[in-house]
Image (tube, rainbow, N blue to C red; front, side, top):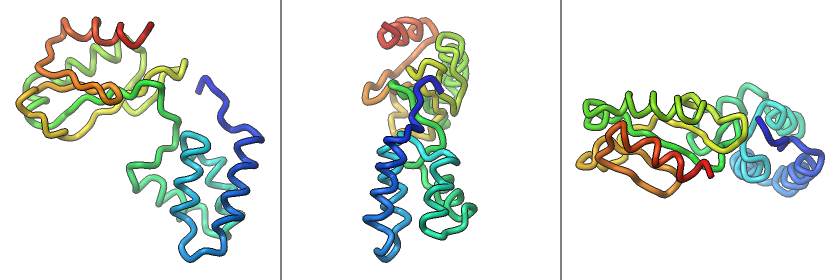
Length: 159
């Protein structure tokens, strides 16, 4: 991870959040949401602090973090690339689109590039089957893709 997000300042913010919420009923979810906001992810170091301060087993916290899709163990890049692997997209070549994105960005599925610029996710159906195969970058949607489209699309975000 290129940027150090595990700073003393961020842990101080986390400690304040824990103090504000620890006496509430069911404090774990609000604390995890705030931790995600503060750190951009909820890595093991952050989970350990929450576990110790709330007296909740680390395994329970890890289970919650990995169960809910809004939480992540690793910070996401500036640009989140999602490639639909729903049936329509898959049969129309989504895997070759993923391979091309990996080649151009150097980031593999489920990971973030070393420079923190790109994260790549293989997604489930996004409901745009008529545009298959579909790629999203943050809020931008690109459909009816062919391999030749990918270098130009990625180049827009690399600059």
